[in-house]
Image 1 (cartoon, rainbow, N blue to C red):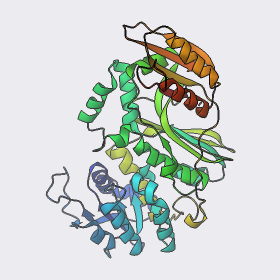
Image 2: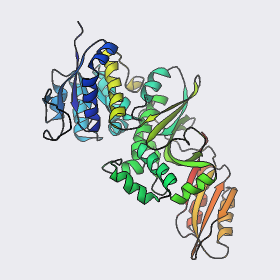
Image 3: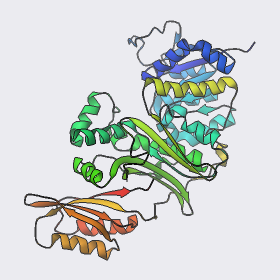
Image 4: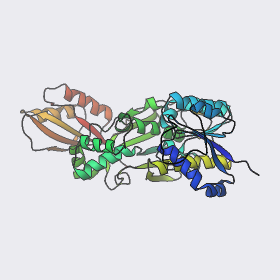
Length: 428
């Protein structure tokens, strides 16, 4: 008779309680699908007295997650505490040192320390699984490591932060400014304790680093990602984009080129009728281009108790079945060091600027763009009141380096009332 798979769950927030509920409610289903019982033997969290809406009396309680990770009656350490360092990393390392497999939802820890943890796990004959770390309930890690393993991936692209997508789509539908919708999202509990992790693109950047590693066989390289958040996107930008047939998304793009690994997380304009353009609310989407499969689109809930706990338990079920894979799809020691590269592929750009309302201001901007080799596709000046005039420009395809040269020259003039906003128009 096959012995039960025994879990130690560290972290009893939304996702941790979701895992407890699935183990309880679907015990028979889990056994039927994996061939063995899956049980929780012990749990750990900061506050044992907190009411979590569910009884935990059936499980041993450990105040220290490291102690939980080392218990003899724990086969799989389930890390749901979060945080790149501190207790999460310490307990994960303790579990691996004790010969335990690890299932985690911790994208920050993997993006920053994934290489070292993968090497430790594989040296100990252990497995780290982390489907829940990227895109919530979407099985994108499994798609890359298993279903698309025969493909040479050329690009991974997607919307990977539901909070940012909620804010941008809510701004569009309500007509309210960023500041108002930011407060609304905070009141609804959508934002991280440090909101810059969401709106600054950092959370999504962690996820992109993980996907890049699997897709391109490189060590996770969060530091190599060009990151720009959505804080400067205005309601005017969203209206202008809509007028031109586009929507604004915080878009992550990773592709390996002859120059190295290009990784960027930034607000972009995408066609409104594209799959990414049609994405609403807190939903996530990942688009993968492979040489054999062409393109696949994965769409689903990017967060929440049920979707994220579902992803955690998908990993647990794989371990119960005996499926053991290298952390990032191939041995950690075989992963290449990533060589960061900036995008040199030309693309059209959307520019919004406030000019001083003085004669020759617009002509000076047009001249600067021309001198940098940036040609104008469309230009629009809106009704205004002195002393400034809002101007919208859409360029023909140009390189980011040429555009940056022009932007620097603009800011050195006496006609700019504020720094211009530049958003790439992405083909999807």
